[in-house]
Image (cartoon, rainbow, N blue to C red; front, side, top):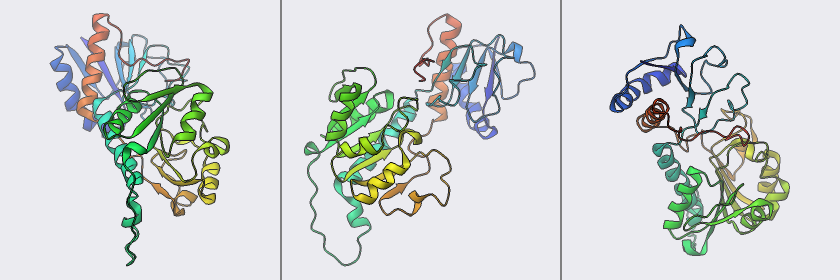
Length: 310
């Protein structure tokens, strides 16, 4: 019997219980699954959300792995009580949702849709957007989400440049790495999408210096992590016209405080961390597969590199 503890908020248990049981049953596993844990010493796997009740992993002496429901693990990767493997969520539903959100906002800025949506004032604005093949879109972060978004944008004929910490080679995406590679991507990106994890190396990757490298009037789209952007630097770039618009889905403090300057800025669009959400049906399949692999002695999927932080 495999003992599985679901350590997340109550609302998530209501959402996940049935899909998890279905996915585990399909794997032919014999298990007990509960969102209550009276005896941590018998638990084999922890299905985990960083905003849930569990903060101390030390009582779970038998546990084999922590399987996160979140793609981001910055809130748990440094927990000193976590000594066992940690897997992050890489979920097809998460990727699909991110691709749809990113593609929608890239097209919005590429086509200049705001000009007509907000310009219903009797003025005939004779603006014809360029074709996608003449527009360069940069993506910082070429993990599963960055790759999926890059492939979708490339399929629409955008010239897609990507940057990652380590070298990558991907079809239809011109890949760069390292400090000079970052500068190359920034200098060319008329629209820039941020899909990096939050690490000490990526925090404030958009700052006064890097924003100044971009083409004047470039658009920023951030569905990745709030701390990737120095807020004061972005606001200054928006005020000067160096940055044309920022569409932001993630922030250092969430919900974004009502008095934050982003709310009132005419060239900022705030969305409430909705770019993509883990889907319970597809995420449950990922969790069940990792438990099956653990029981079969196979490597876990999507293991976190503790040193890299993701």
